Length: 284
Ligand SMILES: NC(=O)c1ccc[n+]([C@@H]2O[C@H](COP(=O)([O-])OP(=O)(O)OC[C@H]3O[C@@H](n4cnc5c(N)ncnc54)[C@H](OP(=O)(O)O)[C@@H]3O)[C@@H](O)[C@H]2O)c1
Image (cartoon, rainbow, N blue to C red; front, side, top):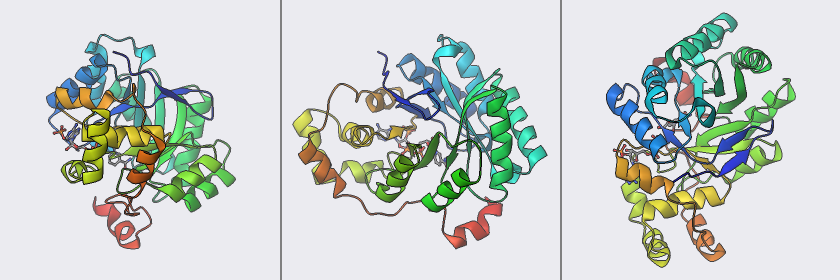
C-alpha cells in the first residue's frame, strides 16, 4: 500500500507527509539498512538521515536494493554545525553525496542553528541553484531565528524540522512557520523514548478505542491532521507498518481538542534556545 499523502513545499516540490527516521547515531548499520528497505516496501517514500548519524552509506545501500525507482523516493540529509564554514560545508555535502551514492538529494537541512549558519545557508543556496538539491530547509529553528534567516537571504527554507509530538505541540512555532510559508516536519513524533507514556494516556486510549486504531496511530494521525509531516523511527517491521497506516481515517474536531489538552509546551531534547545547551553543543 502506498501512503501517498504529500505537502507541496514553497518551491513547488512535493514532499511525502510520512518518512522513516534513522537516528540513533551509529545504530547497527545492517539494522538501519533493513528498516529502510522494510519501510519503502511498506509504502514509505521519504527517508530522513543526516551526516551526523553516520548511516548515510547504509541509507544509500537500502535505496539501491529497495526495488523502488530513485525518482519515487525523497531523501533528506542534514549538515552538522561543525561544518558550517563555506569550504567545510561544501566538503560535508560532497561527503553526503558520496556516502548516499546519489546524483541529487531531495532535501538538505541546517541540522542545528549554531555557529556560522548564514555561511552554510549560502552554500545550500548554491547547491539548490545548481540543481543538485531539490529543496533546502532548517531544523531546530525557533521563530526569531527563522524570520531573521528569511529576511537576510535569497531563498526561503522549505521546511523547519522540529521536535513535535502530543506533549510538545509547538503551537507558536507552527504559527510562524505557516506565516513564513515554511512547512513543519515533526521529528520525534513519538517523543523518542516517550511512546509508552503517551500511549498510556487515558484520553489517547479512549480515542483509539473509538476509532478502532492503536494509540500510536492516534498520536501520529493527530500530527498529520494538523498538517505536520512526520518521520517516526522504528526498526521493527510491524511498527513501521502500524505507524504508516494512518491515512484512511480522520479524527473528529472534539477529539483533536482533547488531544490538544495534552500539550506540555516544552520540547524534550529539541530546545535549541537553551543557553546551557548551546554552551555545551561542541561536545555533542
Ligand atoms: N533534526 C533533528 O535534530 C532530529 C532530532 C532527533 C530525531 N530526528 C529525526 O527524527 C526521527 C524520529 O525521531 P526519534 O527517532 O527521535 O523518535 P520517535 O520516532 O519519536 O521514536 C522512536 C522510538 O519509538 C519507538 N517506536 C516507534 N514506533 C513505535 C510503535 N509503533 N510502538 C511503540 N514504539 C515505537 C522506536 O522503537 P523501535 O525502533 O525499537 O521500534 C524508538 O525507540 C529520527 O530517527 C531522526 O531521523 C531529527
